[in-house]
Image 1 (cartoon, each protein chain N blue to C red):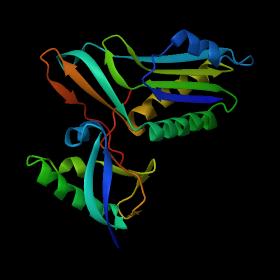
Image 2 (image 1 turned 45 degrees about the horizontal axis):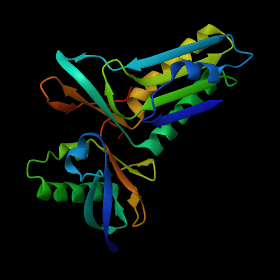
Image 3 (image 1 turned 90 degrees about the horizontal axis):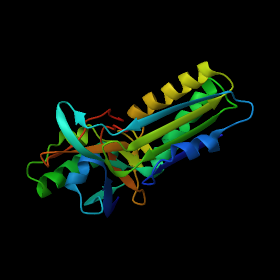
Image 4 (image 1 turned 120 degrees about the vertical axis):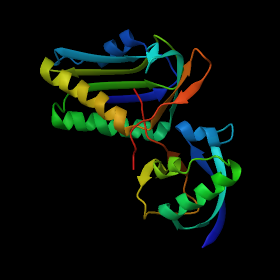
Length: 90
Length: 142
């Protein structure tokens, strides 16, 4: 396990909880499952934004290198990670 | 032929039509999505589109390929989705399908826009005349 600090790309409504470039930085041990990563991300966002609604993370998909991961997929230290809330293009 | 673009560039509908023409195809079906001025009773001033562009273009290409597999492989499809801030009346998405006959062109175009709305990582934030903004709710990808 490697403790890694990563910049997570946030889209849509989650940009409200990101920096000006759309990232949220978080430290976590990798590799980690998507499920455990989401738990760590909720804790981090609650620290930075006291009124943060964790349901936003529950309903968001986690993508790595433009592929959606399932809850048991492993996130590796070198992966680009993006949080994708429910979509509404068109 | 499939061509997909997700960018801030304006949609040039006439140019897309010209580019899409195939000699063996007698039907061109087009869909244009436009920013409207009201949503759920609120006066909309503009809409900002956000997109995870590499994945949005990949998924749109997959959807177009599915449409060709279901109806006509030897057809042409162009999809252009905007990003950034669009005012009321501006085009947010264009889909142009060129097929030998009209029936499949209608069905393919309809399939693409319906799948786009539930599968492609694109989001929109409305700004209202009150100055308030709201990210619209959508379809979960997980």
